[in-house]
Image (cartoon, rainbow, N blue to C red; front, side, top):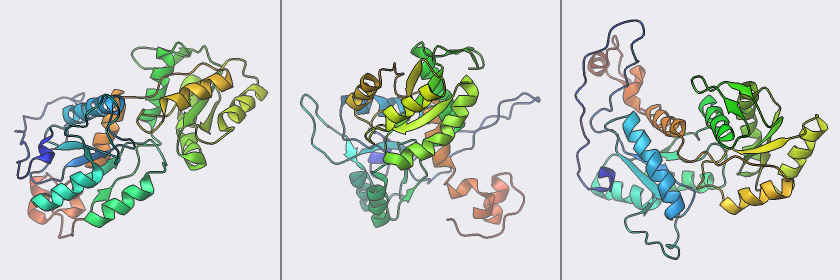
Length: 306
């Protein structure tokens, strides 16, 4: 169980090491200030074996990326499925209520979706009841395009240079970037699709798995453009989409499909960076004079944290 779920548990403190020297030194990671809020990863699914495995691995990546951050996964309300005991799994509402009752800092809520999704409206409403901040979704972002590219290469639908992940050949001559969340999600996925097209040097069209006919229309469009071997590439992390929905789309379209992004490392990195971006302590304008100097920033004035 994460320390975020333990009343009064102190945040771990990491002792900063000496800064590496040289022009090619690795950039230092910002330290998590003492008293920072926990990161609650809002999972658009009820707790279950499949969702839990992906979520726990992603949170492990987050903790390795940013030592000292408290993390917890918040699921949608629902009963444990057959053969599955929810145990200590919590809903987002339970985690926010627990933090409020224990007098802990209000957690930062990061939605585990790459774009617009139907659960976001309810998530914002819930967070507002507790004064919690809900971050932006994880996409569009170049790191998501990288993750999709790798999943395509793993499925034998694209080849990539191991060192730079740059396509040198591709088995698919057109890609349908599939997502969930309706047409809004498909429109937003178009930006990631442009980044993916640049990597693969093939046309990429976005489509919504949960909009009837969207995938079939996208495949037909690619074929009209001259594609003879189109493939599907899910811009889906996993918990937000029914696995049967992905399989049905590939079967109906008559196209091979890559696997969902799952716990690909860059997804965990995006979660960590999205959380860090909303912490006032990392914004020099949100620090006082003394705090700004401690952070290595000259002078800062007095500004209220947002």
